[in-house]
Amino acid sequence: MLHHNIRLLTGILVALMALPAQTLQESIIAADKAVPVVHQTIEGTWLSELRRATPSGFQPPIPSFLTFLRDGSFLASPADGTQSAVHGMWIRVGDRKFLATAFFFSFNESRALTTITKLRINYQLSPDGKNLTGTTEAVILDRNGRVLATTPGSTTTMLRLNPEIPADFQEFQRLP
Image (cartoon, rainbow, N blue to C red):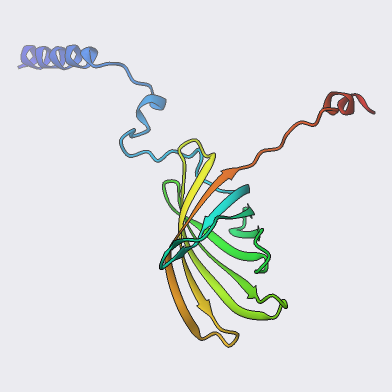
């Protein structure tokens, strides 16, 4: 019996030696289940181009600057001149996927308030974290909050903006 147990133990040890050695750091992560942690935020400033959907196609693109803040809020400054700044909130809902809701006022040519718009937005961040694409549903409300129309199908493309070094940067660094 002792001889049998020794032979069994020896067989188990030989089998274990044939397995590739793994450290704790190599074996603790299940690669097939791991979600990457880089490029999982949209914080920062972006240049956006919104293409509003209409029944006859898309309107000309509207450029905007957007800044997504760490607390889940964001602000946008559209360049079309017919609306206020956009105020919104965002959350991460999956791997490089985000959901946002935003609001802005629209004005006529006399700058009188005409409508309030609520935006419901899906965002997808590129794998390198430099681009953001999205789809938008716009809910148009009158001044009293009554829904006038709901328009799905608008699209957004964005480019993440980065700090840049000015020409006099090296000289500035030498200053006391």
